[in-house]
Image (cartoon, rainbow, N blue to C red):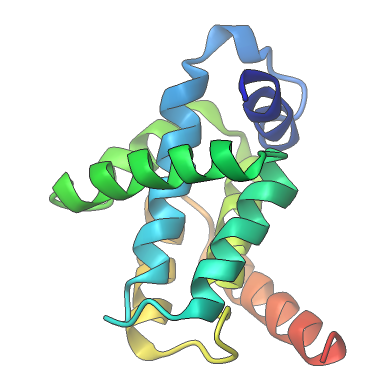
Length: 154
């Protein structure tokens, strides 16, 4: 699982040395934001659960058991968090601009898991983008990219 997390972190961090960061803290912060996004509209659908697992397996390269462990830890931490700052602060500290934009794209993918992005999901991703210091026009462009990709894959 550590190698899988390292692969994910390398994709987010670009050339920054992974050994200089707290890999478990960063991976849980990423997963916690995704879990929070999955439940932002008050409904955790099977499509959102599938998308969460898809993102974790695709991006983190996790086995089913490892994905379950990350989801469990992230869910627990997300439920105990007062706000998003706890997670976005970790990501902002360790990710460069491109890595933070990739994280926002993952959040838009999660928000669109059920085929629609409702106002609560839109607000959550917009807030996360602001906290990650991703400019508004970039966040909008990422949302449009995700929406366009979901239309072509149907």
